[in-house]
Length: 416
Ligand code: ASP
Image 1 (cartoon, helix red, strand yellow):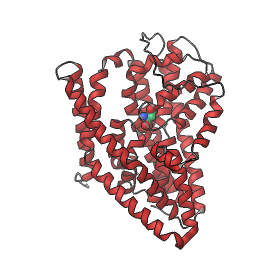
Image 2 (image 1 turned 90 degrees about the vertical axis):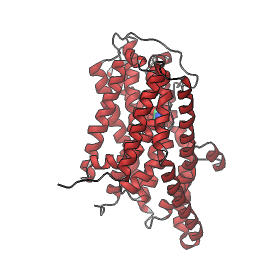
Image 3 (image 1 turned 180 degrees about the vertical axis):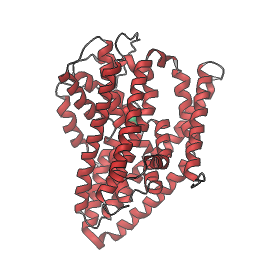
Image 4 (image 1 turned 30 degrees about the vertical axis):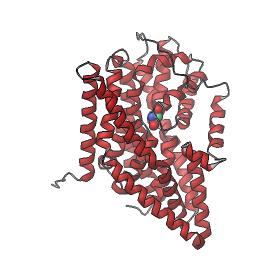
């Protein structure tokens, strides 16, 4: 029997889990009044330091890694194939996730007869609009083209930066030798950013753990009590997608072990859990996929930034369950056609949601609006949203990671 010694990546994942567990208990201590509130405030600060460090490298990393990946393609036609397969794959898996959500919420019916508190909804919640379904998509494409790349950089508009970097990389490949100096610069920058990610990642056990403290400390677990059925349905759905659907796809397309790949991606998945932001996790996701998961850099650099921005399986699944839950709680029965609209809008809303905390909640207005449900319904699920956000973000990143591995295989048939 082969005995596996705990290697570096496992020990980092273990440390992050210890951090998360410590954060959970410290938060609970604060919530129950056994520990001073200051612990929560200090942890919030510590978590923000970690988050800022991650955010600091996102833009230069995306820029450099995409330009190097696309600019280095010998056969530029491959870019088109990678682009098309990526989009098809992302839509397909997101649709599968929504389907799981809709089936589960119809079986469990967590909202029927639930006793709930209605909280006031945040101002930033998207109000949707009559034409929101189509215009959402059209707007997304328009917003992806930067009119001022410097502004996009300062506003961390990731989709626009991806567009620019792909275009730039594409032309870099076209100009050939003349672009060597520029190529060398971005290769160096890419290397440096990856190394910076490694160094920052050493802080993950503290940073991720610290982010958990104020969440549990402020919300506690009581909120979950009243929303137990809803929370469990969301977690069950996320579990089905993460443990059955995605691993099955990975196995079918790559014949590789989902367990092994999960182990390889664990630092990224746990960082996503702690930060509740797929964008902030992106440097870690790229690093784990390339170095641990052996996804070729040219695939990971393209597929993962796009995935962090538009491929959110966890968010899509949660949107569908949340909206159906709200309808059930209001005693409104949605017809099959209306559920089909939920299916489409939840998929689109997840594409439109940014990879930042609570983005899914903000986008829910679009789905509610499309089926004529009151926006105030969001107030019903607000109390547990931050906690569920951690889980759905972890699944978002797991979905992106599996996508990167599968798309790498599809686009490079010779890979083992
Ligand atoms: N927080 C999620 C993410 O960054 C988006 C969401 O709110 O569902 O992936």
